[in-house]
Length: 385
Image (cartoon, rainbow, N blue to C red; front, side, top):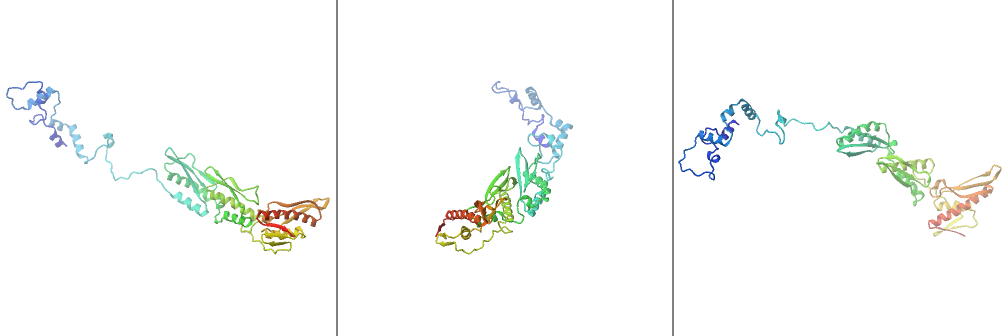
């Protein structure tokens, strides 16, 4: 550095100084050219000209020998080539040496252990975790939903979605450890409850099936299922949340199938009952697309022969005395407990009929008219001969 300064700053006693007396003292436009022969300029002439122009004069040897300047030059010579302060930064920020190979930590330590553990626990229990992450002002919050349980993040904010998922998974792991698939409304055995319920209805009446009504509960889902066997009390819930629509529908169908099994509408395993093949009686004869019924047959016999042709089981006649003081006056109706989806409620109601046999016949009259209308609705006419 000193050699460079020496080569650029010419001593004042050098005849090669870049300061010219003519360039600062005499201007060809302000003075007339001298007719006197001029002698070569010397050091004193240079010095006088610079002083007259008001320019500073430096002695290089004195500058280099100054202790303050010498320390600056020596420290500059020790810095590696290319080492300089960044643009707009003061030299005080570069005190000391920075090792470019030294690793610098970025953010807090991270792990994905909790997320992996959560998914493993949920898989073992047949559950499905659902993360709901929201961003606000470049930070993240959210909650975790597993079955019916909701793990809230609260007021806590995280710097990334991954960090939020990991923290929520850590909180949810302990919750899932105490849960079962039954609590989540999803079958751990993989039972297709929706399919079973549809199979039951197809066997009873293919034109009518379960009706599902889905609801949004915040960011979760709920579902109710209505069937003809219990139309006034749907299964499932409007408020019980599930992470997916499929889980909510499965829960509602499962409740409906359990009710059908408990009330004897299906086999214990939920499968549809096989109908018994009954022999055609003498009261009804099949003629093409018409059912010919003998006019002189009793209504009880007509109903008994007509039911299997329409895919129905025999009805139950439920008769009881109208009053304890008149035990022979009976009232009642017929019911189809095995076919409540096709024939809901009571049919052929009768009141105050004397004698059990007569009351049953009167009840069967109303059942026969109901079955005739059902057959015609299916495109089969019922005539009498």
